Structure formats: structure tokens, C-alpha cells
Length: 249
Ligand code: AMP
Image (cartoon, rainbow, N blue to C red; front, side):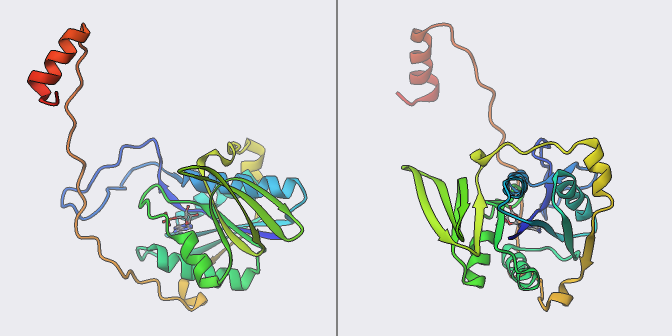
């Protein structure tokens, strides 16, 4: 079985994001970028499936500007076999990503698409669901455990009430949650080997998809600054302050 893993290049999760002075977007100049953390988890799971003999090939796909090649090289260094970059400078929104991925699925015929439950930059949590809808494939979102056998995936999901277990017939789209696994670090020899693995670059037009944005962001702003907390020396003082200063008692 071939597995397709979409991996997005995002602002590194350790970086404090800054809004551009004119409120038109996020400032990404000279900011450290990395693979979306949920996509690292998806890549790790695909690699473990290959190690268990459930998968035969892992194809990592990224959509975006030329520098997404770095993200793909990370996936290759972790253990993906080959990579595809759909290169565009157009701002990509979840529907465009889902349409482009659908076209890649038609070319690559994977038995499974495994991807992050959300990208930590736009927090959309839409692409996996849209892709499954466009393909007419079953979907299992927020996976915290995945077992593949006899053409079915048994997926444990974290939901508000606890854990839910679903069985979906393959091919399917699965989106992964934080507790599924702990992604490996790429070793230096594997980083070197990854430089030689195949990486194909395609324009969106080659896939017959017009990626132009359908939604317009009006304005970005930082959350209001929070006041620093204080330490109180006794329960009596706490009660007094809650009553007299915070006005909540
Ligand atoms: P989102 O729906 O934007 O929160 O993203 C959910 C998942 O879709 C991500 O974790 C990625 O696996 C995938 N994805 C979204 N945008 C891209 C992109 N530009 N390139 C590759 N994968 C993407």
C-alpha cells in the first residue's frame, strides 16, 4: 500500500508570531519555519506502518512556495521515500489544498492519506475533511491510535466524552491528533541520504486546479495584553482582593 502524507511548512511552534504593522497578515520575514507538528506525527505514523510491513511506499506532498522543499526534505530524512511539491506563491486555503491533494491522489493512487488534524498557522482543521468529501472516501479524524488489517483501518479518536473507535474501509483519509506517537528526529546520515531522494516539482496548473483564494482575510490583530498576575500571602487576602479589586465575590 502507498501512503500519501501532506506536510505543511508553518511558522515554528516555538516562535512568538508577530502581526504585520498594517494588520494585513503575519510577519514571516526572518522567522524560523518548520513542518507543522501534526504532520510530523502523520509522517512518523506512516513510517511505522512501513516498518510493520503494512505500507510499501510513503510519498510526502507539500503545497506552497519553493522553500517548502525544506519541509519535504525533513519528511524524506525521517523516512518518506519520495516527495512532491506543488509550487505556487498564491496563498493557499483549505479548499484549494484539498482540490490539489485530490488531483495528487488521482495520480498516485494511495491506499491511505494520513495528515495533520490542523495546521498550527491557520488552525483551520478543514483540509482532511474536505479532501475526504471531494474523494468520496471514508474519513477518521483526530486519530490517537491506528491499526490497519485486511483493507480496513481501526481508528481510536479522542472526543469530549472519552475515546471512540471507528472502522473505515481503505482507501481513506485519516487525520492525526497529538497523542498518536512521538515523532523521531532525523539522524545526520538520513539527512544526507534525503538529499538524494526524488523530489518532483509541479505547478498547480499541471493538476488542473485553480488555487485562487475564495475567502479574504480582513484584518489580523494580536490578542489584548494580559496583566501580570500577583501572589497573595493568605486566603484572607485572596478573598479580600476578589471582593474589593476583582469584584467577582
Ligand atoms: P488545516 O485544514 O489548514 O488546519 O490543515 C490540516 C492538514 O492539511 C495539515 O496538517 C496538513 O497535513 C494539510 N495541509 C494543509 N495545508 C497544506 C499545504 N499547504 N501543504 C501540505 N499540506 C497541507
